[in-house]
Image (cartoon, rainbow, N blue to C red; front, side):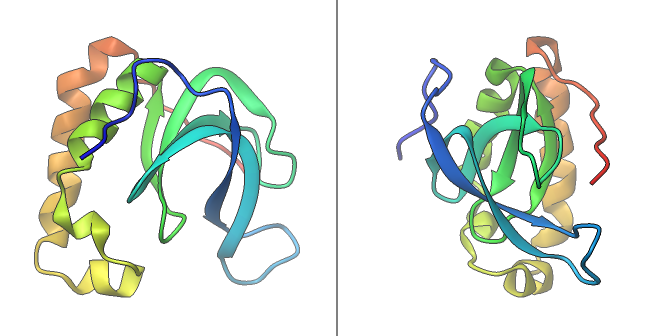
Length: 134
C-alpha cells in the first residue's frame, strides 16, 4: 500500500468537505481546491479558513475521509498529520464507502479511541488543537 510521502504536496486537488454553509439547513458535501494528496481512503491537505473561501492556513494540515468528506479532527504540521494518516491507512473500516456503513459497523466505536491513541503517539511532531467556524 502506498503511503503519504515525506515531502508536503504543493499541487492543488479537489477535496470533498462535509459541511453546512450559512444559507443551508442541512450539511452536504462541498468541494474545495487546495494543496493536498490523496491516498484512498484519506486526503491529507492544508487546513483552511472556511469552505467558501478555502484560504490555506500557513503550517496547518488536516486529514479528511475521501468518501464522506468528514474531517477526522486531526490537525497540525504536515509531519504529524502524515504519520497519523499513514497509520490510519491500515484501518479497514475507513474503506467503507458511506457514513451509514461506517457508523453501523461494529468496529466503528473503537476507531475513535485508536485515532486518539495515534494522535497522542505522534503529538510531538506538531499536533495542534484547532477549531473553525463556518
